[in-house]
Image 1: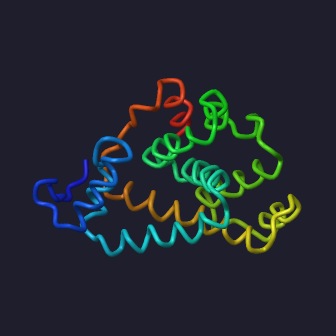
Image 2 (image 1 turned 30 degrees about the vertical axis):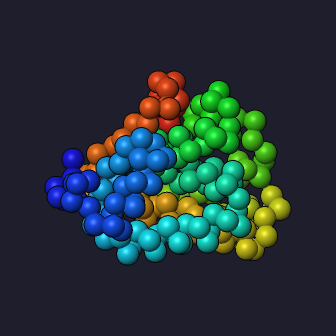
Length: 189
């Protein structure tokens, strides 16, 4: 549990209340990471704007696959569960279980597998990446802009994941995540 004192829902100003209301409308409760990030709503708004600029050109499917892989690289239980939940709108649960367990064997395209491997590496050991890593994406047909957006999406996930991990924010387990999917998302972290 984070040592930070978050703003109770009853004491939230209009900006914080809007953040909390968005979570409640989306998932029925205010996530622990939202409460922590609400301590600096300007930074959170900038984060959301950045993610929008990155995710839009990638498309939702690619963005979520990159996010799941980058979160695996950073060993982020928070982001694996949150984006596993979001990915249920894009994939059947059985395929999402396979993606979470081993995206290399989950009926994804070779380009999607390459993109996820790249994103996972960004999360795990970006300091050892070379042009060969980016070249792998190019060989799978990604344009320079797409390679940049994949990299930015993975790096942005690292930023967010590491911030909430460093603050020991509680991990919320969404109700929509069943035991099999939860186990696949968290295995090996």
